[in-house]
Length: 111
Length: 115
Image (cartoon, rainbow over all chains, first blue to last red; front, side, top):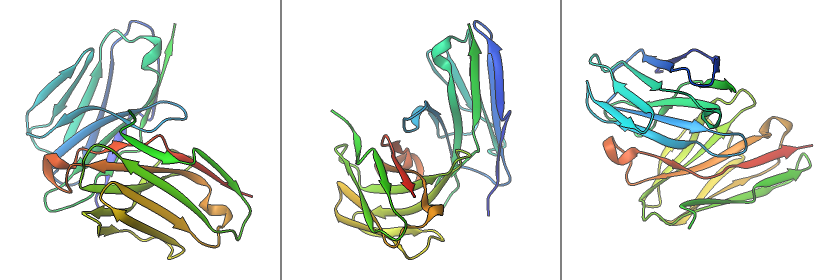
């Protein structure tokens, strides 16, 4: 089956620092999604990407759909304590009904 | 207004019991999903319904049976609960099953604990 590698697994950063995380796939995806999950809650959609090369921002968050269609990254600028959570990438390949999720990046922000 | 809602939020039960989790979405979406999130936070798809029709049925014990009475509801019934069923179960919905319509929105989760 498809494999989705997400890195890093966890990050500890100082408030105000920029953060970068990425996902790579063993196969081509047509859609990349980035979610954030806070403790006790469901994943919340942050950014959706539908075209290779697409670069999309949502406030301090920026995500890109890799040109090879096998990778995506998420950047968070000027991190703040409420950025804490687990960030998941998810991708969908052509002809498939399901999303494949990465294993998540756990972000901790030190005030 | 909650877009995707699940009940109950917490469920604690004994091994061998039968239980149900309910999910409702008010987004007007055609497709709904059940995911299981284990203790390592890995999200695994279990089932998906599109217009009340089963379209994804992953390798899940047949003790788990989804039921979709209408497009806005997808319930999950679990028979003969086992210790390994303890997890957080998430319902999700999307406009459709493919392409850009497959942007999924998640409910708050149901934490199931089997004793």
